[in-house]
Image (tube, rainbow over all chains, first blue to last red; front, top):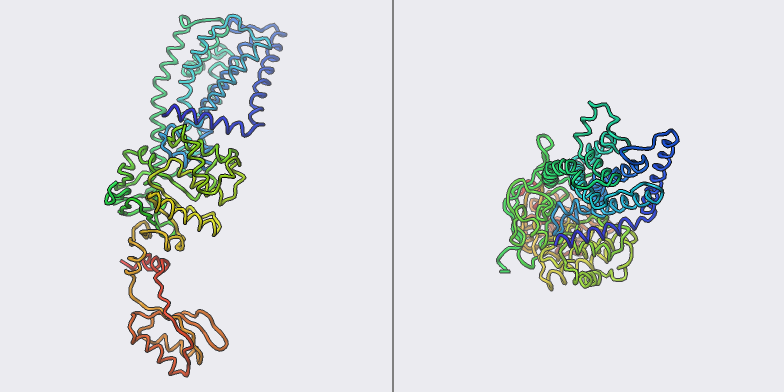
Length: 266
Length: 328
């Protein structure tokens, strides 16, 4: 029954996204523009004689980093953004009074955003390949596996973020953390080897660093699970800890919501 | 279900919001039962605790103390089973996805309410027809009027054919004719014909009059009284209300009325150049008190033009009486 509902949630949220057509189209256009930005940044570096990073072109490096950051932003932001929209629109109460488990009712409306995020990442990589990114050695199967494991880990941040929105309405520290700290320290736009060793400690404490490093390994150097298992193991470890904790926090937030009656407050 | 088995049972329910100086006791020791097929009215002024009780019964809120069951399911222990068997209509007409059509909105909620895929179309057609919205099936919800959105709100609550309906001021945004149509539908179709159990909340007295089978009146989070409208009327202190039209020295007659022990109140209904109309409430229904009133008119050279009994056993008086803090 829950898979039937999940499908209904995806269809419903696709319809909602499509109902705002200009916004829908500009998301895809924005993604293409960012590919061009990475391309010309790469051209600039090539002119100064530095175009190679981690065994590939800087363009490919940036393209993967940019695609992953979109994923990062979406997965951490999707739940809370959707939840807040439902609260403001007044649709959260009718949804919570349906025979749908509360957690699914609160998080499910973001399912389309996550699917679209994956679609945007794939399109970004394809457009990048057309423009000149080098995926000649890419191990796509391993890359897909890494994306799957990364998403599971990233979702916990999204669940934390949604729980914060339920309790505090605004001022979500998780989004701040992902949008600032993670961007700088996980190697989205530059290799973390450029950071001073003492700052690199922060990088190693972030799951995004491992996800991105593994993804680049698979797509730029064609590495498989045999080479990337340490990163995958760390990612799985983060997931094993963060996911249950985030669900516990979500349950607390739901309890708080029902205790205080702040469902319709925003 | 056994007619004696309550569909809704509330036992010593309490709900407190906030702590310390911010603490508000919204519901205090409330107990009641609602039986199958009953149209049960929860009535009270704003802040009486009506909506809080409904939010607890629909699992949107946790009680501070006490227990409540809907369709035999504990609202705290088994919220999913409770929600599967109820429909909620609130006065919030904006609770839809405005850009999506009426049908798209209902398709979504039908799936969320476990309506099997093969039945969704049939159920949507039925509820739209019931509330006169068939022609609006493909219209974006944001294009509907307030009254149409409120009817859609009711249609949504019936999608999964729930046994119990909670209607929290469902006619608030409707014009008089539509509200009458919807009330008729609730009483005749849903309560009398389909035998659904309905909890109807309102602070508009005329909505409850000649409508609910049983009414519970709340004030300050407590139940003040409960019963059929006729039972409640019978519990009112006996008094007699007369509407009289008199001529003569009216100011003196009225002052003399006020001095009579048996007269509870005198209210001017209309004042004319020759005759004036008054409502006179007598503390008891004895003929002696009424005769005293008549004697006063005669004594001041007045004349009683017309008179009639205008006893007020309306819910307005019932609520006014039982909401008073000095009434035990």
